Amino acid sequence: MIRKNDKLISYSQFRMLFITIVEKEYNKVQRKIERTKIRKAKNREYLNRLEKLMNELKTGKIKDQDLEKNKRAFDKLRNDHYLHYWVIGILSIVAFLIFITTLLNFLFANR
Image 1 (cartoon, rainbow, N blue to C red):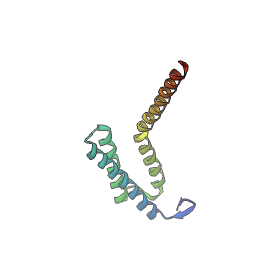
Image 2 (cartoon, rainbow, N blue to C red):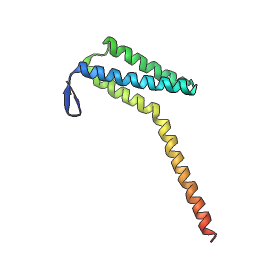
Image 3 (cartoon, one colour):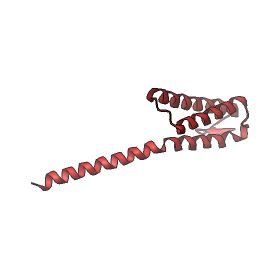
């Protein structure tokens, strides 16, 4: 049994929930690739890993005891895939704040 929000759920329910999460992530990345026409090797490798995980979950190659470990590994894989977006976003915000601060300092220093 696995805890999900302090509720005990069976391995079969967790497996089905995990499969839907992986399918949603796979479809999201697939649509993003089709929409932007960007086919990076990193995205293709990520899709291949998701597809392999989906197949292993559906065929039962992953044992019930290993579902939690695989969920944590999937979360880490997903976080690593999106990490560069967070870094670029934070650096953009910092650069924008530095630009605004410099601009305001320049405007009010000349008065």
